[in-house]
Structures are given as C-alpha cells and as structure tokens.
View (cartoon, rainbow, N blue to C red):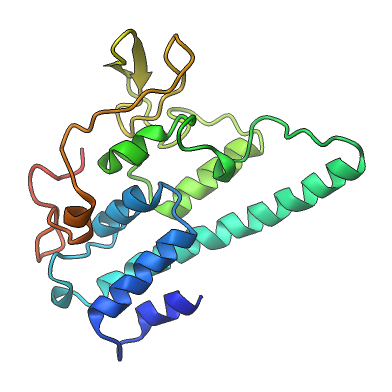
Length: 213
C-alpha cells in the first residue's frame, strides 16, 4: 500500500514513482516479475518516455492492486481451510495446489519466466478470478491460464516434444521424460531493455515486432 501510494503521488519524480511500481511487483506478480511488468506496459500503455503519459503508471498499479485484493481474499480463505484440515489431522496439501504456490521451475507456466512476452493477455484480475475458479473446482474451457481454445503448438525439448498453448505457452503436460524444459524465446530480450520499455513507443503502443499476438 505504501508503494502504491507513491505511484499515485504526483509530487514525486516520475522515475521514483516507476521504481515504486517495480517494488509492488516484487510483492505480487501473477505472471512473474518480468512477464507481469511487460503485461502492464501493454495493458496500461506505459510509454517509453514516462513523461508522455504520467497517468499510465497509475493505471498499471491499480490493475495490479485489483488483482492482489482478489488474491488476498482467496489466500486467506485457503489459509483458514488449511488450519482446519491440520486440526483434523490432514497435513498433506491436496491437489490442485493453489496457483500462487506453484514452483516456477516445475510448473506449467515456466515459459513466462523464460520468455516474458508469452504471458496471458488477460488483465490480471481476470487471470486471478480464473485461477481461483479452477481452484474451487470449476471446469473452464480452453487453456487453464488464458482460456485460448485453439490447437496446441508443438515445441521441441531436444529429445522429445511438448505441446504449448498458442496464446501463452502454458504446458498442460511435461515432456515425456517427466521434466519441464527451458523455452527459448522467439524474440531475444534483456531485462534492462524491457524495464526501459524499448518495446513501447511514446504513444503507448508496442513497437513491431513486439506487438502481442
């Protein structure tokens, strides 16, 4: 909440407000820090030149905040549920494991860590609502992460093949060897370039070839 307030504070230099946004992402980032930041640059239309649209960072932090409120409510419910289960002698975590406890290296969303441009296009609150619904037993159509109902795309692991969601590179099943493998990004990237929004123009629109699919 402190850093969210700093993002809103028009008395602060824009780059200090931008740093406060990054700090918010270290606390809560549904797509991972880099992928969530990249998502927000697109959804909030954060321009390369921050001065071109000072309100863009406010739009970004408010989207993040809305999603975090939804997550906190569900996480508190889950914590109460786990306490009751432990009192009843059920200490093992039942499947499905809550989405916010997934391991990035072994989870079906590992690609978002390795290729931050392949995250879902859903607004963060929509993603959180979708994951909470699945956790509660809802059978939703399409990709569990983004809802894409198109055919999966094959991706070579070097010794086998895995199928990935065309929309967000979610991997429903691991490689036949049982492991999750590194996804080589289609577009090389560097965190410094992403952080400086070299993929964005001053009009708040992504530059080709960085446009979302």
